[in-house]
Each structure stands twice: as structure tokens, then as C-alpha cells.
Image (cartoon, rainbow, N blue to C red; front, side):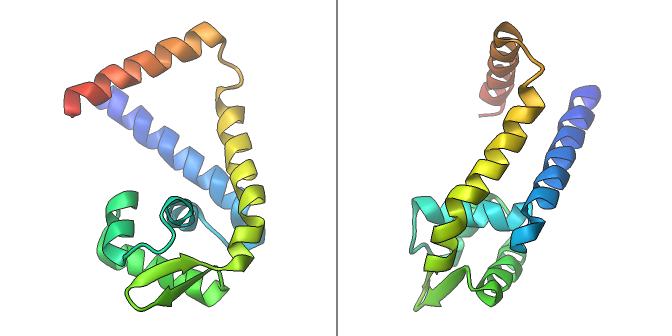
Length: 129
């Protein structure tokens, strides 16, 4: 299991680094993107809802939220967090960048290999659920 865990962690860190590089022109990082993406689905979420959705510690989420507020990408209204028009306008470009980076990683896999990988990862997830 240790070999699998190391590879999963390494793959995650490589993906995060790549996304950070690609989003830097927008002043964003992978963690910012996670919160923005979560708010795309539930605009007007509480800090607690966002924390649960992105699976991060509350203090970390609050720090990221403040960064996004400072950038003008989100706003706080009462107890809810909302996306601003500025981020809504550029979100399609940001999503396209992240999606292209993800597709680049798996582009060297054939359909059968990708299907096998997904099935094996699903089995591992089922075990933990």
C-alpha cells in the first residue's frame, strides 16, 4: 500500500504544481480554484459548507477566502459567500485551463488503459467508503 500511497501523493502534488503554474496569470492557485469551483455549484454557501466541500481545514479555507475577497473574486454577504461577476466572467477560461491540464496527463493512455485505471481506483474508493 505504501507504494500506491506514495504515487498518489506524488501525482496529486504534480497536478497541483501544474495547475498553480497555469493559473498564476489570474493570481490564483489550485486551492483557490477548488473553492471557486465549489461556489460555481452552490453560489451563496456558508464557510462551513465550503470547508466540507473542499475537504480542507477551516483556518485554511478562511485564509483562501480572504485572498479571493482581496482579488475581487468573491464577496461575503451576511453569512454567505458569493462569486463576483469578475470571476464568473473568467471562470470558463480557468476551467478550460484546468481541464486541458488534466487531459494532458492522461493523453498518453489508451481508452482501455484509462478505463482499467478508473475501475481500479473506483474499487479502492469503494473499500474506504
